Image: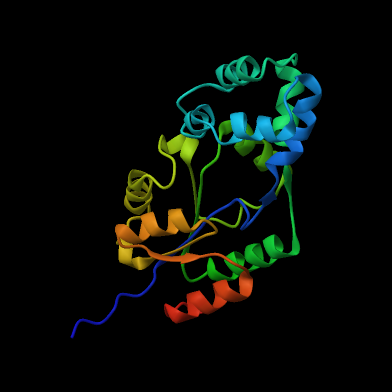
Length: 208
């Protein structure tokens, strides 16, 4: 009987795992510049195809802003928009616990990050939140050109890490992203909290 392979890499999601966020913060602030409610802004803005294109790096920050301004009929400048768009992130105890865990793992495993994120958020987080330095590899949708749950983004990460899919432990807070990763062989687990994450890691033979 073939012996199961050992985990060689641990792949973390970013949002609501290492950094928390709340899009409604931006939606409420933007509502001051147009006649839409925060709920309408959220629906038009944060759950739209244009936002997905932005996260995949298919359009520039300025073109994204122009599309948003047009769709909301908002009276707002790019200079005013950018900080509102960016200032939605915060750190919780949960985030700090996950960071600490990743830091412990990096001595014995490849530790990597994979995030659906646009270039404005990524640059902002790099300047304001010290969470990226613990990772050997940081993979972003805006640089890879694909957005989770597209299986191609996971294939690109597997290739870059240089290990087999079955050698990668992956955690993400969104079930649909976990299910997509499972289809191509990653050991994928839904993130709930650091205690569940520890248990899932240990179930796969990862030493903490």
